[in-house]
Image (cartoon, rainbow over all chains, first blue to last red; front, side, top):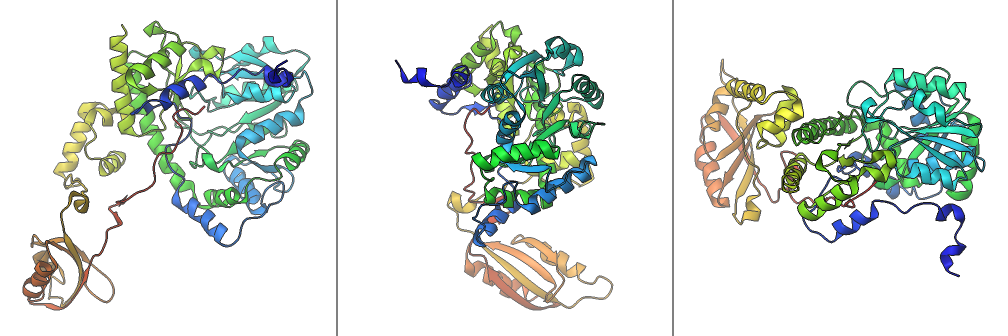
Length: 388
Length: 159
């Protein structure tokens, strides 16, 4: 008997993260340029940090309402009203969570019964599958295709629908591909969700980081508001990853159920982060816009650079990732990533960490300075030349 | 054009190839635009922000408030231009409020600066009063925090 046998079968069935190995290699090296970081290189704008410090000085150290501070929920409600013409009741339809991670977890736990299937377009963020399993559900990955710029279509989803399909879990702009869905794509998806009566869980954490056109909020599509559990937070747009603060918006029944789980497991999101989040929504937009403009320039630089090196990639339209096809190197994604870091000290993440359909690709994050992106491109060039 | 200026203001050494990619223009176009901006004196010069103290050089800086008697037809301009021409004078602003010009003067020693103020600035006809303030420490200059303790604390790989 080993202790591991005593673990729950659902935990045992979750594969360890494919990223760990690269992390360990990188940790032993100096002078690594990392294109492997899924968070902004900016530090939280000072006015946001300062408001938290000021809050601490005034004694903001207690629990808050389970759903989050009323002022924060009001600001979130106002934000969605202003930007997407959506009305969410701050008292019943908004829940402040510990990042989108928690929101995703409790959304799945609130709606899934054991054995319920969740359609998950891939490549996707690493926790979609794991959280589905932990909630008792069955993840059903559906590959998005590069020919279609990693957008998912109803035609691709349709064959995977069974009587047990309960929900679809989407994340656009997408980590790791940088893909977005345009309004016409989302409308088709909405029709599909309605036809099969599916709940849509839409992770829009990268929504503000959309570089061409405007972000389309899934909940704002006709008839989708109540069917959708919209997840968002402050981590990416306001460079607030470590604060762990996000929120969920949906109909009062779903939010009520999620609040039930949240109150028994988390009680509330940290008050310090909530105070900072209020400031972010009230006065943070100009800082956010400045960061987005900078990401956009880096996006152009790395897109050009990788294409010039012969690594084919489609132009990412959102988030801060680019997902080049590395099959021309003759290597697998893991091989490429491991050899690159060992030979040229550039860290990136093999596409397979984000699902089977990520094979032949690597994820490069451009949440790093122009100087580092240029230096990394030179190193990758050297690597490609020497491995021919 | 504005974005080009913004980038150059933050980093004058960035290559035209990088600028071309970042702004999705051809390199020739970028070169042309920069030449035009230089010609029109929108880009005045490319300077380097140096922490001289760290290099080990003692530099004394003083901020001097100057009161002037404005002159007919030219107001403060003629006197301001005159003051601008001294090498010791780094910056000259016309101000609202209790004094007229704010002048930043740099020198090797306290004595050198006080000499300059006493013999050169305050003796100019039309200068009615000067008040000198010596700088003790520079914390932030032109948007750059000199001793910044913020650093990249992120893990090397994050999903």
